[in-house]
Image (cartoon, helix red, strand yellow):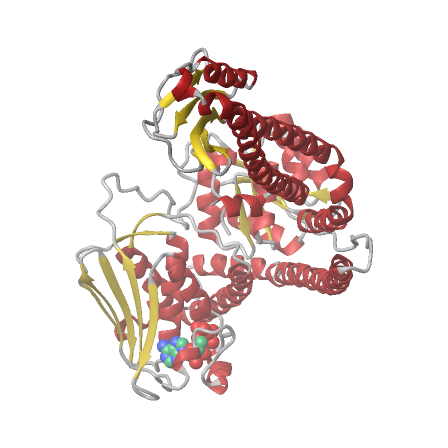
Length: 628
Ligand code: ADP
């Protein structure tokens, strides 16, 4: 833990700590050695000194001791001993006669008069608290007595304390000095490392690979700096080429998106009058049945064309992760039945519907889920000859789960081709595909949509000629308590029943589209005022009462967005945009300009009718949904 803390320190601190630690260690070791030497010397000195004193006393005691048994006077001995008082560290001393009897004593003022009962032979005894010395009193080779002296170690300890204080003072001084000069000491090591670290930080923070670290010398740090700078150089050149490649890929992608948007706009625009004319003709019940059939064929193919264009755009959305779904509780059985009606209305005799699932409400984007089944059913229709059976069934394989299957008895799929039929542009048999039409996008989009719903889409087939099965599985939800009532009106229902017919301002610069849309809308009971430009539309709005504007976005003298803003600002008017551009950004720009809804060409009458009703009925246009 401590080591880790040291590792995390800045290099400056580390160097300061190292300098201080080594300085302090050397000083402490030197101090300890000095004190040890001092103790040894002082001890020897004390022993010698006390030995000399004992010897002096012994010599001075020779005569009094020799005549003691005659005179019986020990006073001289006590006097001799009292000379020891000059040394304040001598605690007590005594003289034994040759029989070992104490014949004279000296005790320091505060001392304790306790003496060993018998003299020991000549000793020098050191304990932690005192030093004892015994010394013989010799005359002509005969021992007349023994001197005993005991001293405390105050002098020794005083010296040790003094040395320790000096060493401590040196230590503190050295540490302060080291701290003062540490910046200079560490500079040659720390500076290059810190410079390197600063450059590394800049590179990490700003991704600035043009930075280079300054080299201070040819030591290891210098080598490291060289290697680091070389590495930065390499990264910089790789980075630059990557950025160039990324920029060119992005601009190519942008150009592709732009191209797709313009292409789909150009392809969609001419489809609108064709589609609307077929709707008009289908309304004409006086036409013979075979002409009605032909009109139906034209309509279906135009719708197919529009679907192909939409598929292309959908694929772009999916691959760029821009697919947006609007989830709500939805009746999956109703969605399937509607899809069957759209795709297989003319082959109902081949279709068996067995929707046995008890739980069939799902959380879904109804439009997108319809698109999934629309695709599966139109494939079943395409790849199953007339007269062969198509079965659409549902069941609940487990609680909370619904399985919906489209089973056909058509051409089937080669097992080898099965794994790749969900890949974009993949078609098992291109000859068949050419005959029946299609781009190989439908299943890719269907799978992506089912995935986005949290479900699965699986294809199976026993092989060519044995038919195919497409299985969708989704989670179910409980039946919603407030089941939404269908809001979209019957698309072909006339508006003439309304008490006051709505006044529409139709702005469209494509002459055929304007003509046919005007005709159709009038037929449905609306009052229609046509305009071919922004200026034309503003003039019309100024001169007559308009309830709703339906406007193209690309107009010769300006954009439909500006027109909508102007009409809204001047008259609080509501509007629906109609455009061949149907990408997310187009829809968002429409909503921003104040349009209640964005419709993509070719216009489907049912959607237009529903949009008109929704727009007129809505109180807050910006909250109204957009529609592709
Ligand atoms: P396409 O627009 O070509 O139909 P899809 O993605 O919908 O594109 O289908 C891809 C390919 O999968 C088709 O071209 C066809 O070869 C095969 N396929 C799809 N559905 C069926 C089916 N019901 N029976 C046989 N083959 C099918």
